[in-house]
Length: 294
Image 1 (cartoon, rainbow, N blue to C red):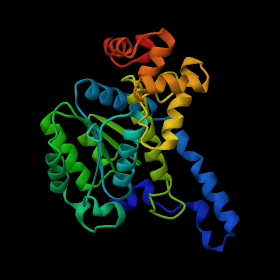
Image 2 (cartoon, helix red, strand yellow; image 1 turned 90 degrees about the vertical axis):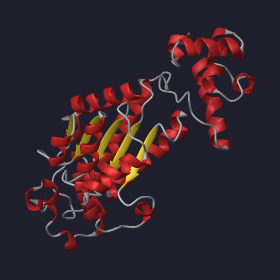
Image 3 (spheres, rainbow, N blue to C red; image 1 turned 90 degrees about the horizontal axis):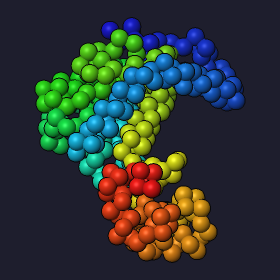
Image 4 (cartoon, rainbow, N blue to C red; image 1 turned 45 degrees about the horizontal axis):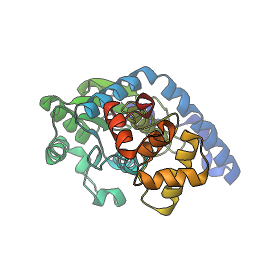
């Protein structure tokens, strides 16, 4: 029942929040937010399992697919969209799906999250395969839309992960890996866009970033597969080459141009003093890992 969920309980620290000053409200919210990283720390081993499943899907030519309703769905879409410029992946490799479709990103669409069949249908629409990993996100841990999606994913043979913010969450029963981050009562009762939403965002950051590192998208702590889609990112690409190869700006620019804007290739060219063609071969042999190519 809804009243039994920790995310739905009243927070005893904020019972008189409407009597607080603005500064007191902010201080209270800030104190409550500090509880989120500790709650996540308790689930790190389980999050690791989700990362390994995602890496396995990428290596098998599959996808990472987030699916949720409301805030949870929007957070999944945000993480998926950010992976494209950050790691140079195609929009099809990390996918975010929200109950109600694109319109629901901006507008609350009532009722769509209450139908398990809609979750199944949305995964069918993206041609889910056994090579994919599906991560169902629901702060309450009981959203029928997400349950339906996880049920269908299991039928197909895809890897399944559930992210919720309550212990003993219902969606956990439908996933191979269940991440349950107990963030507790919100400062505003039931408003899971707050601590629960913050926890979900942090966990999605972890999963996508660690998985991308696991397939060679990072060298050291540098985004070596960044897509230079604007002037700022072109300059960032050159600075990455400077840091990775320990060269000055003019040298980095020269290698960037010779590599046709491909940062990884430019780094290998610079560090191994080789041609673009030789660098490409070395990277392909190394599975895209710069360190292995060196």
